[in-house]
Length: 598
Image (cartoon, rainbow, N blue to C red; front, side, top):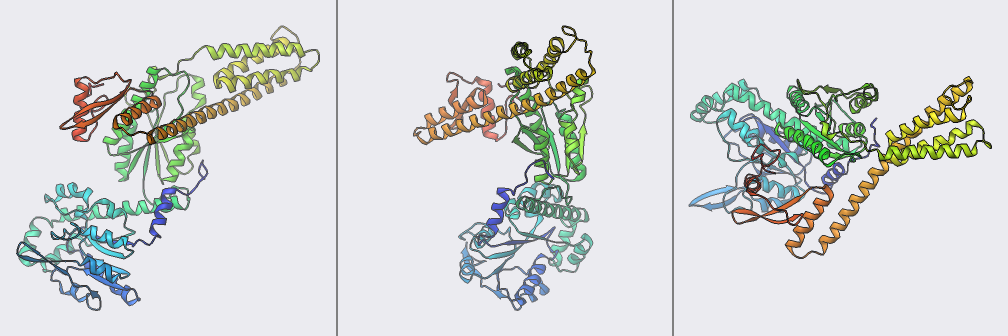
């Protein structure tokens, strides 16, 4: 079971509700190349549905002169096409208005990537299909893998031919069903030779260029892999909507956990190699926790820079990057992994210096212990670069809490001496136990450990005979002292944990309050300059950074607001900002372009 209460995902429930809201359902017959039989398969399945009593209408089907495909149209209602005159030519397109007026239960729309003739309501056929689906009409359509927008460059590099008609990936992602119409390269090439795909002259030219065995094999793999991605997304939506804890080993997914103490680049590169071997999608996850007390501004900056560099590297290597709030890092990582059906978790091996640090373990140890059936890959640091947090990012202990702790124990000692005549020795130990709990609640774990040590020494020296020595004469008092220390350690640890949760809760409440005040402030803003200044101030106040906001001004950009108000950008900063705006890519400090900017 998960480390968290498992609840259905609101997003997944919304997707299910949308499917039941009267919108039509889309089924795509996907092929690796022309001629594999997509239209034939669609018409065959549509004929079976018609015989089952379903109202089926053919909006548009291209038979390309194939007799066996045309024969399947017999018995199906085919709407007449709409005639469009364009440049002294008569073009025929699907009559969208007639199909909407006819309103069948199922409409057949061939060649989803087709571009409509000028003068049509929509420039692309997939937009016609979107309107049919919005009207509550189910649609079956056909598509070749080379027409998927995100794969356009990949297909062009394989076939040396760039396809101009493409369909956005979002259309495919919204399909309830994708059926791969598969044919081996040898069978498809044989169909070409027999003239079942193109006329003989066109077929011979296609065999010499596009339809080579290597090209067809690569396109076939792309079709199968793209379908697998959609099926994996559907499985994930089903699991989240029904609160099913994962992972279900139906497909491989890799989660790389980025922490301040992880090995950074080595961790991300290993995750990339693992995902490549498994041919799986991968995600870099960062759990944002409350800022530890004692960290200086320089330490915070070093930690943020380390994490942001690691996340940027993950993005460049093809990962999806995700940041989530949390306080129990191992539990939050595993909850996210189970909720999103990750089958592998990659975590860095932090450097442990000293016996106490090794005994305490850490995020990696807890992940391994609590992972259950999810494999955890532990990655060491790069050669010569141990996976450790930058020295400047280590919290600097401040003496104040420790002096205060000593004062609390001294006050407990005075109270114990005052109660000595009226209470038994064992009861006085409760006074010191209270001092340990107060120290833990006020200052955290490490001061509470000091309180435990001082309380043990004071209790032994002033109250256990022989008095004013650290010698214990009665074995019964040894047992009493042992259980006092054990109780103090457990109670102090629990109190420190509750204090950390309270601090985190106060931080979240403060953030929520600031955002609420900001939203009210926005509601009363009428001028753009006021809006920009308020936004800059709010970002600076919440993130503790300096903020400058720039807006386009003709062919360049200019500073319109900032906090502190007198803050300005030098020429290097403006050049980096201008390049980022024109190229839609990051630039400046920490980026690959113009890294010298602030």
